[in-house]
Structure formats: structure tokens, C-alpha cells
Amino acid sequence: MSDNLLARLNQFALTLDYIDKNVLYDIEGFFYDIVIGGLNACYYELCIEAPGSSEEDNKFLTTLWCSIEDRRNTTAQLYRDDGSVYSQKAYIYSTGHPIWITPQKTDETLADCSSIEQLNIDWTDCDNLPDYRNYKKTGESKTSIVIPLRFQKEIFGVLDIEFEECKTYCNAARSYIKKLAETISTILGRYISSTSSFGDTRYAFKTLRNEVSISDIRLPGDDLPTIFFAYPEDSDDAVVGNIIALLENEYSKKLSLIDWKSISDPGPINKQIIDSIKNSDFGLCYLSENNKSSDDFKYKDNQNVLFEAGMLHMLHKNRSDELHGWLPIRESENLAGKIPFDFAGDRVLIVPRQASGALNEPLFKEKFSSHLNAALGLD
Image (tube, rainbow, N blue to C red; front, side):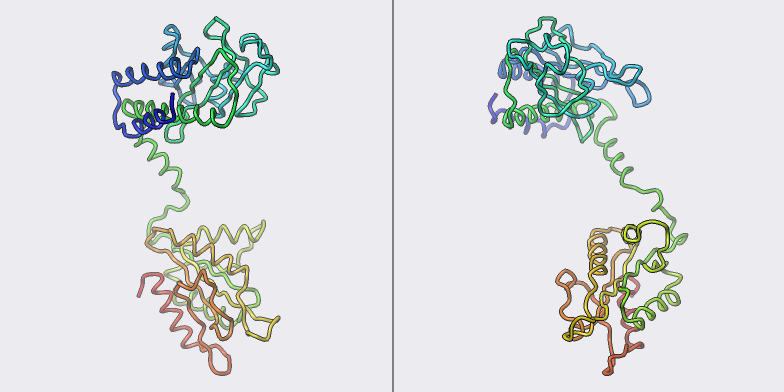
């Protein structure tokens, strides 16, 4: 089977919207020709999770396709009462790890190997792989390749292809088998989704459900949006004091303030700060701190606050909530050097100062309220 034919088959699988039993029957015949006629395999078996299996009940695998007619539609239990798996196919289904096995002695068949110590196991390391089962009762297989089948990231079956020769495990062969399995997974997945609730709607809802945190759900008005305020330890007290006073007095009915210094729960403070940033609706960062190491500038950007500002910048950049964003606050370039490149495009609030260097409080309050209202969508 050429790479070109495999690519065409995969392209065909991706274009399918609906597959009925008649089309699936024709595809199965083509798959037989590919594996037995093209790859010269001596046996294949494709199993899927039996209808009605669930996590609460013991799961079963049913043989959907098989090169031996009598094996089709047979059902096998996955787990024993002690929780161990019954077979290698059950092991691959439960772990999701593919295997490529051959006898260590080339004159032996897989059926001659009574323990995994007699096998070469490639693709995935398996210390507790169950013994090989010879379903053909002829004992001719020297290579067995078992790979899980996935549709929309969920494992729904396994594919076993066997050969009379010891096939060499290599990247090219592994990639080829993987692509073949992915193509068949797409076809069977679309067939299953056409006939049951396994399909796109169920998967989309499951994805949505996993992304929603119940703790984040609130009725508007019942819980105020949070605003995280980061600033250096050695910052200008006048700037920090005015910000906190404004938030607590003029915005107390609109925002709930999280001051990084007020975080006092047990545990690592850095992790708590990061969690607070991730869970905040809005962020404030006063980047500047007193510069005691240089005469060039009176202030410099604090590295910890720059890191926290970077987190806020990236997190809120992709938020789709009605309330989102962050506000960087910084000393002027004359006092603190150039604005960091990453934030140069943001609406930075430059701290206004008098000729003496003292904070221009009236102008700062005016600019702070204007910038914050704009960020909150209140202007």
C-alpha cells in the first residue's frame, strides 16, 4: 500500500459526514484488501467498545472486523474480578499505549512464547503485558502490532495486525501503521457518531463542561468582580496609598480589591499570588520602585511585578468576559527609563509629579479614575 494511497484514504475519511452500514461494509472489504493483500498480513482484528458498556459496569470489547469470519461479533470482557486485564488488546485499550511485539528467538512464533520475557516489546515499554493469545489456532504469527483507536481524543477500540514474519520495528513502519489506524479511526468514529450519541454533540458538550468551573459561576450583582493590585515592596507610598484609597472609597460598590500584601493564607505566597492573578477579573500593576543602585534614574521597574504584569497581559488578552483587562501604572521615562517593550502598546498610566518630585495627587486621581473607567467600560 503506497503512501499516496494512504493519504488519499485519509482525505476521503475526513470528507465523510455520514456513513451507513452498507458503506461501512464496502470500506471493510477495502480494508481487508489493504491489510491482507497489500501489507501481506496473516491476520487482523478490529475491536470496539461493546454497546452498553460503561465505567460503572465491566466493559467489553466486541470484534467488528476480522480476517477470520468466525471471530466477528464475538465479545470479550476487559477486566477480571481482581481488576487485571484479560488480554493484550484489553491492555492497549485500557492504557492507550500501542505495542509492537516479536519473539526474541526468530525461529519461534508468538504462540511459542509463554511469557513476556520471551518477547521483544517495542513502541511502548510494558512490564505487565498479558500473555499473547493465539486466536487463529494456527500459531504462525511472529509479529503483532496492537494500536488504540481514537476519535475526537477518546479511545473507542483497538486494531491488531499480525504477520508471519518478524517485522522490523522502525520509525517509518511505526508512522505508517499509526496513519492507517488514524484513518480507520476517523471512518469508524464518524460511523459511530452517525448511529449513536457518541458523536460531535456529546464531545462538544463534554469539552464545554470540562472548561466550566462551577466556582466561577455567579449571578451578576451577587458578587463583585475582583481587581488584583500588584506593586513593589519598595514603591512610592503616596502612589500606592492613593490607589488603595480610591478603590476602597470610590469603587467599593463596583470592585472587590485583592491587595497582594493582604494575602495571608498558609502556603507558598508566590503560588497564592499566581492563583489570585488567574482568578481575578481585572488587574492593576504599579511597576516602579525606588532605584537605590544607580544615579541614572530615580525609579526602576520591579522584576516580580513585571512578571505579574506579563501574566495579566496574557491572561486578559484572550478573555471574552464583559469585564476584562488590566492597567499598568508607571513612572515617566525621565524618571524610570523606557517603558518595557511588551507593554509599550498598552494604555499605561504615567504617574504625574510636581517639579519638586512629589506626587501630583489631584491630577493622579483624575488620570487614575479616567484610565480605570475606560478599562472597565464605564467612561
